[in-house]
Image (cartoon, rainbow, N blue to C red; front, side, top):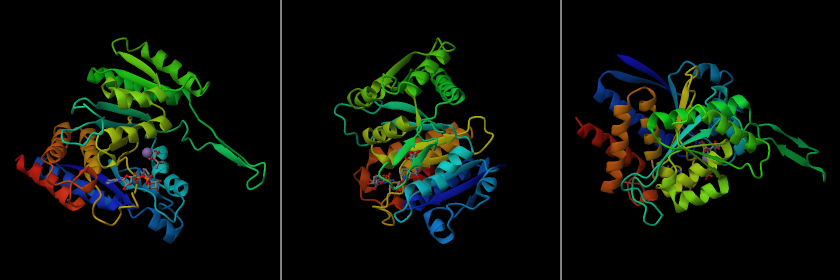
Length: 356
Ligand code: NAD
Ligand code: IPM
Ligand code: MN
């Protein structure tokens, strides 16, 4: 039997609540399939750990993670620990250390998901965001000069390497070609006269190898407007780290909210483990209340199944999420229901068991 070695890092706030449900779903799938199972190792890292030890993860954390087949992460961040410390000490350290340069985020309106846009039907929003995940504005390059003095200056560099841009853009072209969908690049060459002019140039250069892929380019300001006014014009989308971060929260807002938005941090070469997580944060405002929506993390569990080549199961898990949303009986408050986190996870498990 195939055994997948899984590292789970539930971390902070609602992270542990939603990860528990995703683990339950993955174990159910494995049981139903019979051909594979998941071997879980949970790591206690996160903000509480930091307050006890002064570290977000152990010194040898990356070494211990590197042989897992995948990492399943909840959310990082808690009041009491500065966000740049917690995020750079765990989530960003893993994304960067394991060269997970592709952040794959589906923005898809499922049947039954609440959509705030008028006249948009399920199927009317079906995008795959390919967010650059290793450099750009989140490269961590800059300086803080004359700290605390009247002439204080901060510099945050946007880092765009040829290798970094080419590999993410190529990944997106390959995906669009494979799926027979259009590819849209989102940038901002009018104002960002180095980084985004370079990005646009590489989008065009790489595109010459993909004459069969229909492309489109938007400036990010116009793109955010079109995502609301005419979302169906986007299919596969490739963009920089910062723009991808912001636009995928917007994407979540038009497809049912952060409680439904999943993401995968992929190292396509599979030299290192990839990491799967809901795109939402630790939601301190609702943590501990048992009302966090676990469907985003369950959707990222479906991405794990896809990544391991069990697309049939990935589809079934997504199908179960869609059924639950359209039935509308067992949903958390963020999507208009009264159920608890736990009840939603159990309902997904029940739907999967009914497929037998
Ligand atoms: P957030 O995503 O945690 O929350 C934004 C809003 O969405 C809140 O009102 C929250 O209650 C709601 N929400 C989020 N997920 C939900 C879910 N599953 N079910 C129901 N409602 C949900 O963003 P924030 O408030 O800006 O950040 C809180 C903390 O999380 C900060 O420390 C931030 O740095 C961190 N953060 C971490 C990640 C990550 O680990 N991937 C992502 C974003 C933010
Ligand atoms: C996300 C998050 C992170 C990011 C933060 C918490 C560093 O917002 O995964 O979208 O911007 O990448
Ligand atoms: Mn984000």
